[in-house]
Amino acid sequence: MRRDVTSMHGKRIAVLGGAGFVGSHLCERLLDDGAAAVFAVDNLITGNEENVRTLKPRPGFTFMRQDIVEGLEVEGPLDYVFNMASPASPIDYANLPLETLRVGSIGTENALKLAERKGAVFLMASTSEIYGDPVVHPQREDYWGNVNPIGPRSVYDEAKRYAEAITAAYGRSRGVKTRIVRIFNTYGPRMRLNDGRVVPAFVGQALQGEDFTLFGDGSQTRSFCYVKDLVDGLVRLALSDVTDPVNIGNPREMTIRQFAEAVRVAAGGGGKLVFKPLPKDDPKQRQPDITRARTLLGWEPKVALEDGLRETIAYFREVAGRRASA
Ligand code: NAD
Ligand code: UDP
Image (spheres, helix red, strand yellow):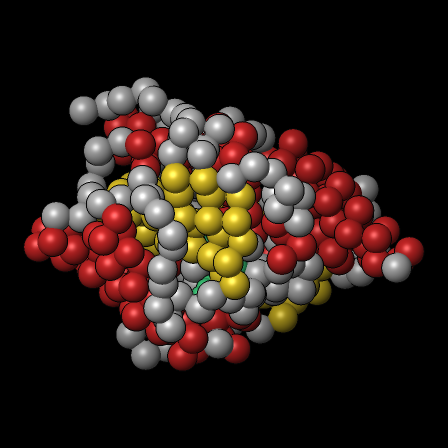
């Protein structure tokens, strides 16, 4: 049944991976909603305490430096556990293969046990990567995917597939109230400039007047969602009673070549296009079918790419300015 409750007012919530890009925006949104307590748990392996600096003085916010693979305890009752913890960029998970597998498997089970002990709703941040290099396009949630189980991306893809499986199993066999979100490419302020993902890469290149590095011929497609839209989808899903996986992403699909041009226009700069080898198993196409999110959550993205890019570019300019003056 569709419900239109969209606020976390008065709730007590743990956000695992809360000092990361998405996690820190989620914490901020929860505090803005009037949550009674928000615990951001993070081992800072790819995150940054700077992302939660402005949240620390806010009433109800607690930062806990903790590896969720090692175990997890949060004081007092909890209404929701959001599991956002995992390296997420292809460069990060290539550098951290075992950490990625462990946080998706052992870390996710520790997070599920926490939710079970507290009687909290558990939301698992899964990914469009579970569809692999998809042969069905756009991707609907009932598509099972096309994943190489031993390739370089498998440490992430298979960890997330396992995480979905154990989440569903805790729902079926232990009565935990579970939600699974499949997040498609998301961008915005607080991404790391050097995390290797295409948005910070191209924005950084545009701001420095460097050439855009296109992998392959740039004809592969992605669909980019602004982080504020994503976070609204996460909150709506957590507040719903939908246990099946839900895609959250922006259906506006474009080639990476078109994306480079969009960044050039938004940033007012950037060099020529240079072509580098395509990484192994890089998906050729990706676009979410968001019928389920629209129908069951009343969610759809609102922020146009041009507006989201403007905010993102302003953030990277500010970071560069801070670094220069430090
Ligand atoms: P991120 O790297 O900025 O954030 C992940 C956070 O998890 C980091 O702060 C990191 O330090 C923390 N973390 C990792 N392992 C941990 C552990 N063992 N214990 C505690 N904390 C740990 O990445 P992001 O882009 O913010 O992604 C957040 C989540 O959303 C991830 O689970 C990712 O798989 C998922 N996701 C993101 C996107 C996207 O486009 N941003 C797309 C699909 C899925
Ligand atoms: N990409 C690129 N140049 C870069 C970084 C990435 O052409 O400097 C391409 C990458 O090969 C992929 C797409 O951009 O096809 C999106 O990459 P990203 O790492 O952001 O996310 P993915 O969707 O692959 O997880």
